[in-house]
Length: 375
Image 1 (cartoon, rainbow, N blue to C red):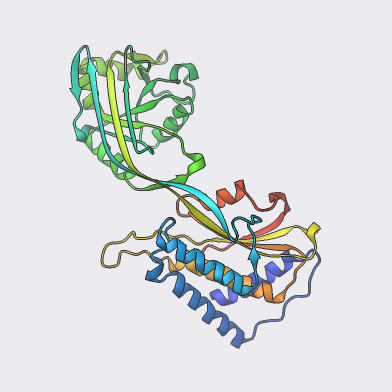
Image 2 (image 1 turned 90 degrees about the horizontal axis):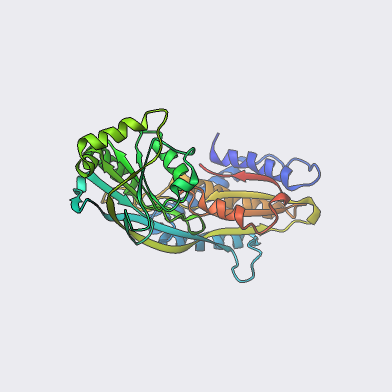
């Protein structure tokens, strides 16, 4: 089914949802009208996916061009602002943090002996610009070896300490999250070798975008087994590892000091959801929500074609949503309010949608149906 004909089906469903009573079905679209829809869809996709919009990444000039285009098209279609905030028409703020790891260093000291750890044997990560942590005997926080413990670790054992855990591929991220929930000041994960450190850097070294309201200041470090053998001695470290697999294992304090430093390129900025509204005639009938995400990945390719334009994901979905708004406005008024929502930061984890759900312009229970356009 073509996007234009699919749009016609969507229009029928939305018309049904927008009415508190069963309406007469809209007439079938003539071929000429379908062709006109195709032309408008193609034009909107061409604008949104143009190089001028830079891949529509939140927090870039491409975002501002995208938001201005959406507001212009919503207004032209006959919508009004749906933010229900006189101080911020059309734009509902989405407060974000962008963080990209930069540099890190890990060093130990035991019995007065300094044990620097080579770059290939350790890595540390934080969402803050810089974190410098020193812990050990007489420093308030100590190194506590927790082996393979996770959610079952007593909170009083973890709180305020540096937890040293054994890494397990596919399992350790969940365990690490469970341990962080118990409020340690940092977690050091011991991995097999230098390759594991490299893989960790590759996985964690990319930009991460998160909601400012959800940021948790976590310091995560990773060191190799060889590094721990140099700190404690091979026999002592191997004894700790073996003990972690026994039924009577209990967390053990490691009598060493550790210094962990991590930095990141951090930026705080406000993006925007764009919200339009077609007011209904029956306030008691509730509302219908039409939504799609406007953002894409920005520049993620290699020169000379570095821009990821996002024609499919999700310029075409937004174009379909705009066309639906035009046609719903032309066929109204409808019984129910119709909110048209273009969300930000979907590519980073549905962050704009989460913000809408946490700070909606209407009670969520008033929404009787929602239609998401993601192509």
